[in-house]
Length: 189
Image (cartoon, rainbow, N blue to C red; front, side):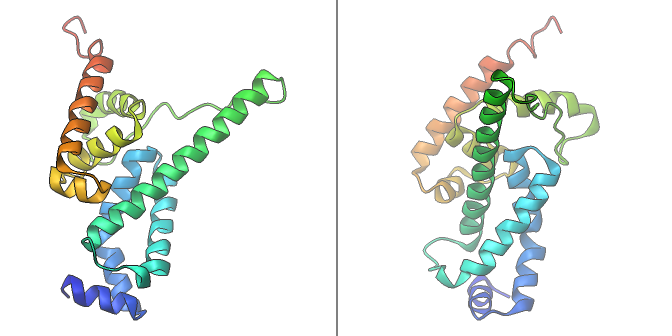
């Protein structure tokens, strides 16, 4: 089914069209969310929420962007919202710990992405930790281009910015990652 026919079927509530959408886009959504939240179970839960939101709001889809662009936007928004909530909970846990009201929550220190070969797990964990420290827009651009293999133009469409802005974000992201990872990749290691 071509994209326009799929969109019309989805907007008409066709369950088979929705099943086709989920089957064809579930890996894209899951890997995008996982690259941001870096927790397998959370990524699975959020991916389901992404498809629920798509199902509930497809009637409002106007087709001003490609369907995949819209789906990326929904997935990124869900993942970033989850990250913000997690940071808020961590700040509250830190405050409670400081006030002696409870234990401090520990952040996830070991993260393994399914697309990373076994012999590169340690390097990937270090890279993903460094990625978490990037500003949000840089992290999104880097994730879409490097993890999802989107072009700069596709990334610009997903992020709703210009291609030049994506190039600038990628340049700054690479520079910051280079600074954060220079000691890890030094010759002394």
